[in-house]
Length: 193
Image 1 (cartoon, one colour):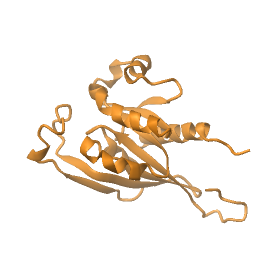
Image 2 (spheres, one colour):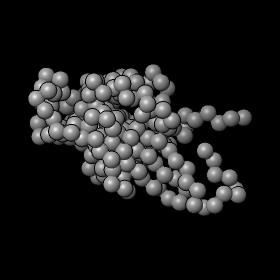
Image 3 (cartoon, one colour):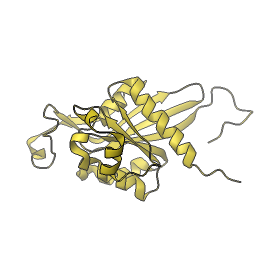
Image 4 (cartoon, one colour):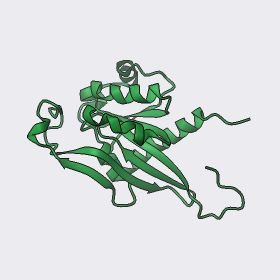
């Protein structure tokens, strides 16, 4: 969508961004920290039905889980608005990802280095669809023990995929992840001749 010279300064360019990753990695927290409206959250209490299905060992205090999506909005300035869609992390809800990804400019894939395997499905999903993504290593305890090279090796991540450490609870840190994603998506965009 382009704002042409005749349009008013109040015209907003909307961008859809996904926040993805495994179960309990901080997607809802990130949407909450960024949204300038009360976010729509589809969190429900975890029940005994999730025992053996959701691995909550690394997040023992987690009492709720996203069952559809999270939605938030971040108005950047008078011309840009970001619509944030947090994906559900459990495999039983992955069928919704195709619909959530439709029209997205890219994704921030959150990683908890205590559970690296949980981010592989999101990375594989975005790679297979050629959708730009960046890796956001959420600063859970122990995340500072590994350097960028070790994390890239563990994720089989090429140098053309940006990687950063951030704190999903901190709006400024989360905004830095969004900026990195938008810059990456712009670099990958094909400019018509």
